[in-house]
Length: 434
Ligand code: COA
Image 1 (tube, rainbow, N blue to C red):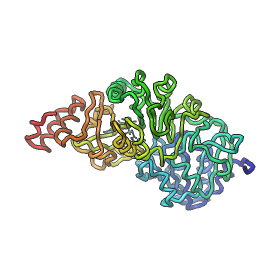
Image 2 (cartoon, rainbow, N blue to C red):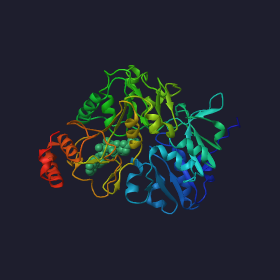
Image 3 (spheres, protein in one colour):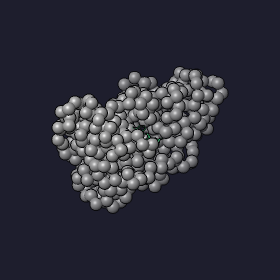
Image 4 (cartoon, rainbow, N blue to C red):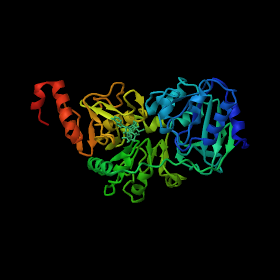
């Protein structure tokens, strides 16, 4: 192993040149001090047209702001809360891409990676460090980057699997001991818990779970305490999974791929979660190329892919990335896991969401709002769950789907939806029985 020599963050980011593409590791592994140092370098007027890529990151994202116009331009692979406003107003941008292919953008050379900025665990006695909570596209960025800058931080958990990389993969070292920025899991409300109950009824003993992002996954996990032999193969998980692992409900014994282990590619949670995965061989952090490959996912029986949506139209088209033309998040791994569940023996792809927003907008709509994109197509869709129940749209005709979706819509929206369906499908619609 090469000797490790630390430099300051300001010194490290001097390697970035105008026109470079920079990758940041995701979620809490985002190297805050490198982001801040890069922004300071931007202030100095030495840089122009630097592209920044990342998935969801926690904390501030100073380089996206309008004041860096012409200096930095963020083109993220997912629109997290810290870049949402700037993306919606055009000061930052988004690259639509399946999560499973984020790594391929670098490995195929479609996107160059000049500098990878990552945060890793302490080096072990064998000369290895761990990428901690972000393996996803970060491993590919490390492999492809001309220069890798790593912050070594004792708070980064020593996650196993593909997260372990040789310290020699790093060119420039910086040290920091700031605690990781936690991603506080959303507390499920009453409606979420009701949705959780309906989803839990669909989850059979021995199922292999994937949980997407948002408040719903935790509400579902809170309702699975009496299940048996559950497994997890997911792209991400949060603190809500811990009680089920500790109680033995999640033991992975029915899995065929990495039996007895939890597979994930990034993690979002609090210190409790990060402490739990530290040096834990039961958690296998994998390249997103494997975690999100539908063929790999589908090797496990009874895959339950539980994801959420912003809007669903009466034919079962799911929008999960934008509100009309305004990007709210990204496609993420939703379709990777919907496909995976559909390939799995006894698998179930579930889209779960409240029937109405806090502002009283029905999330089941006659048509998607102008500008909304389809994440899960009407051909992929199977189960849809709201607080009012669960329906399975697979193998159902358009008119049957409309009836089923209206049955789980918010009561205040049902009449208008029914009228819209009648206008669309004509008088035969009223005769349809589901
Ligand atoms: N019309 C207008 N506004 C809507 C809306 C609709 N149909 N549906 C939701 N909203 C608003 C909400 O009011 C809320 O606004 P606020 O931020 O001002 O409170 C916001 O959009 C988010 O809605 P919410 O229901 O709280 O979302 P969530 O946190 O549960 O996340 C997704 C839901 C779909 C955004 C989330 O699952 C996601 O990003 N998915 C990406 C695709 C995916 O599933 N990938 C797999 C995991 S990465």
